[in-house]
Length: 238
Ligand code: ADP
Ligand code: MG
Image 1 (cartoon, rainbow, N blue to C red):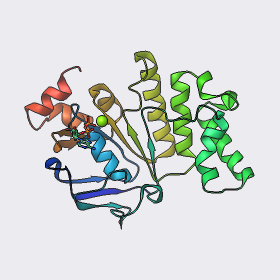
Image 2 (image 1 turned 30 degrees about the vertical axis):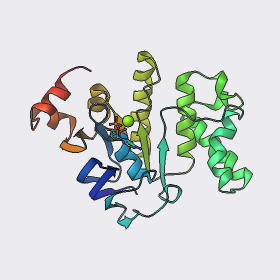
Image 3 (image 1 turned 180 degrees about the vertical axis):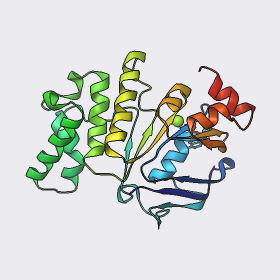
């Protein structure tokens, strides 16, 4: 399960209103992409869903439950950060298993979950390496593995590929799409890259200055952009 509903959510930093009242539904199993220019509020919105940023008003529901006041660790979501945030002194095995050790899960169970995640991410041969001995793409996969072991109801990605070179980015994009097809888990993916949005999304949410300009499938946006901003954004290479 992983249906996420935003109801009239707003966010201000001091006097600055970054997100005016915003309504949005992300269906269970959907791959939703938030796209828009730098500073339009994509990260803020994702952090609000994750619980890392409080709301100024409105509420957020996950599978019908109001989680507005629920702390991040109890929302059942997994955030995959762009800067891999791996522990450099720990092996891949330890990095992936870290959240489970924090939950005091039994070691045998941790080992089984870590190996299943490593298998699905092609990391079996790297379990005993340290992050410093891995490529950028492999490190990104470890970060995803650490999210997978918690069986989240949704994965939240904030520009996860922006540190990778162009060739690797294409490969990782395919891997994340493939992972979504296999797992059928809700994913919200933030990017400023139109190509990523158009190739990965079931549903694209186009943002400008905290306002949703349009929500639709890649084909909807391409063929029926609601305004010049959407047309220009989807039409022009970055
Ligand atoms: P994006 O991810 O789309 O680039 P952000 O969500 O990071 O945009 O930022 C949206 C706006 O909110 C920007 O104008 C940014 O300067 C502002 N902002 C974000 N976080 C804070 C903060 N902690 N304090 C003040 N302003 C912030
Ligand atoms: Mg951002």
